[in-house]
Image (cartoon, rainbow, N blue to C red; front, side, top):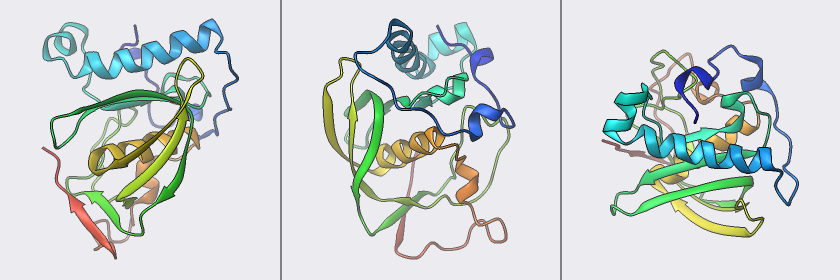
Amino acid sequence: MILMQHIVREGHPALREKSEEVPFPLSQVDQELSENLIEYVKNSQDPELSIQYGLRPGIGLAAPQVNRLKRIFALHIIDEDKDPISFVAINPRIVSHSVEKTYLSSGEGCLSVDREIDGYVPRYARITVKAYDAKGKEFKKRLKGLAAIAFQHELDHLNGVMFFDHIDHEMPFKEISNAVAFEHN
């Protein structure tokens, strides 16, 4: 089980490295990593478990955040229609995206960053993605809103990019052209 002490923090070199493609069939180690990533995000959103194990709530977790340079991440989100979007993405990629941008009006956060960082992080408003599940089956999804933002945040981790790299540090709340703010509770 992944706990907060297993999550590397800002400044750790794994967060700035490009992760490696994962071969199939998955090794036992990569299978367990996939299961542990999705287990963390689900458990962290359960009020009892997050208190019991001291888990900071998160909607996504990428392998580099637990010091494993593999192209794997997990997302677990309840979208604006109250539908769960929950999956492990292996070797994920964006195959198309909207021209329109979005950003979280409250700013983004990260389990690997222990400080508040103010500013808007521009993201594509809608994306079509492809990835593989733990059985090696390719899937395709169209994501919008928080799920699209979170997918892009986690994909950045696989490329050694942190969310705050996208913030305009001179004017962190500068209006983003062709963007609509996304409000998240």
